[in-house]
Length: 226
Image (cartoon, rainbow, N blue to C red):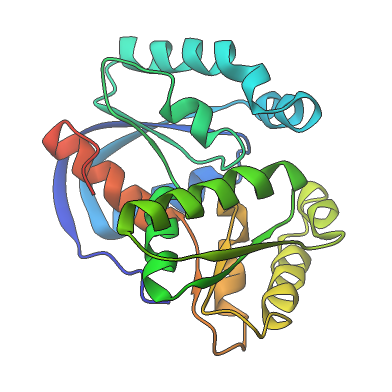
């Protein structure tokens, strides 16, 4: 909803750090649609999300930094972390190339929509980092933000079982139940298909399209400018 990016020719290499292989076709399709010439290299480490959920995001700092170093050594011009739970860790790790978290442009768009923002997630470890990110973007924009969080119950079990339709439906029901918000944020990239199922009049924002567009600009310019 309102997050379409124009088709652009970008020449360069973007590494993507995922915690689920399900994200690979999503970003491949977006690159083909809107960022022709952008070469994607996918790194999937499911264990990072599992450990971050058990011990907190900081517990995976060393592993994330090592993975970023590998991506840079293999020629990446920029890195995009598609996992909201560890996005902050990746963003602050520090490498020779820009490292972006996929959900930052989404957070900025939600802040622009209005002060009452509801963050939906299906994994509890994602709630606090995403809330903090939205509040950070509100501060950067000089705007007020009343950020609430909501965990969609039982949805993640559908995703882990490979039932993506049931997963998207559960997320959509969660979004439709939100009535007192100016914007709804789908905190995880995996939740994006629910955008096509919601019936709420509240704007619903997801991260892949906006995040990839920002990463493509970083590849083109050499800096993670918005």
